[in-house]
Length: 110
Image (tube, rainbow, N blue to C red):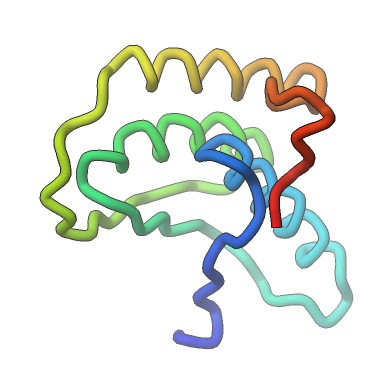
């Protein structure tokens, strides 16, 4: 199983990372020797997991991938629920247009 674990190293924020993951998964699924991907497990901080899952279920769910989550114990403060709503809207924008809401000059990150 460890060979199937992939850390996200692209994107500037939660939505950027998940849309970058969606693009990578699309590429891997099309590759003749690519891994069979039936679902995605997100691992992130407990305070961040609800927002990450909300975004991933919109972005990856639109590709037919079920998403579940597992929280890491970070003991950080809970996130503002408005951030989740904002990112849900941005995810819908990405689904409709392919744009994640960042100005193009910021790039996609490393």
